[in-house]
Image 1: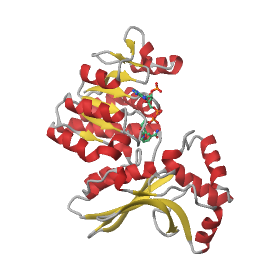
Image 2: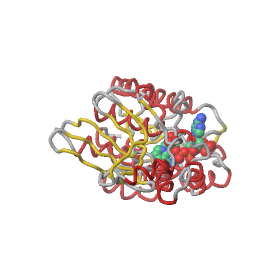
Image 3: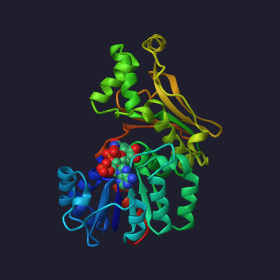
Image 4: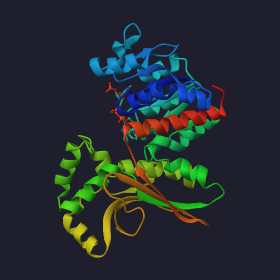
Length: 338
Ligand SMILES: NC(=O)c1ccc[n+]([C@@H]2O[C@H](COP(=O)([O-])OP(=O)(O)OC[C@H]3O[C@@H](n4cnc5c(N)ncnc54)[C@H](OP(=O)(O)O)[C@@H]3O)[C@@H](O)[C@H]2O)c1
């Protein structure tokens, strides 16, 4: 299986390390060899149709900042979407930054991959948040796979759990904590009576929040995940504009204390049902299994016959998300001989 890897940051590099380390095991257990033949970053790309040496690619990226400097095989620019259409390969892995305004560059990359006959594994939520129904339709029309396990829950398989472990069940809705950054901030505000600003600063210092934390604290990241769950599991064709979104910047230590007095905690909760999709700070009882601390994520699926079923785990992390990509690659290989 030849892979075009677009985006070589935390997640892309983790995938390369996993493939490097587990190559033999994957061949033995699943009967195929994942080979990264093209890697693209913001400055250029490197390419070898026989498979890149991942040790070299990782070293060049670390030391020189771009894979365009891969000896003899690297080039500056052009656009990722052009590289995708001109490259041979069966699968495009999209791991560029999530952009919730216009979905770019991921949206063009995914469309280009599907229109030129390549399966797609994306961890980038932007294109799905804005155009998931259309992208699924395009993939279906082209008889290709569009997979996105790592977009919700990082390595914790929330989506596969619902689609593979609850067959036959009617899933009526889902609710939970889907963003580790905001959960960490709210946990610190409660445990140490910090203001929102102070807790955010601490999260940034520990590397849990990005320098621009807007997508997390304003609720867009959680809302994107709700859109993905809606389309994939609840079978509702939503986009980000259909979700009612309130972030956590107005949560105060006082409101957290009031919730605590009644046996609850304030959490940023994403909810999806047949009729509504919301993201907002809510009081959640401490006995509710989704009431998890720190950077943990938790999601409850409400089912017609089995009742509520909850899954808890780390919702992000480069290695965890790389593992979700590998899951999708193995799944694609199971359906096609590539
Ligand atoms: N990190 C996590 O734990 C996690 C978990 C789940 C999902 N995700 C999602 O996975 C994606 C990647 O996350 P990350 O943490 O790996 O981000 P990151 O470290 O910022 O890496 C992003 C990569 O995309 C490249 N890039 C940016 N613009 C590009 C363009 N126009 N063309 C080609 N490449 C471009 C960057 O190039 P340079 O290296 O040259 O800057 C970088 O290699 C994001 O969408 C994120 O939301 C991340």
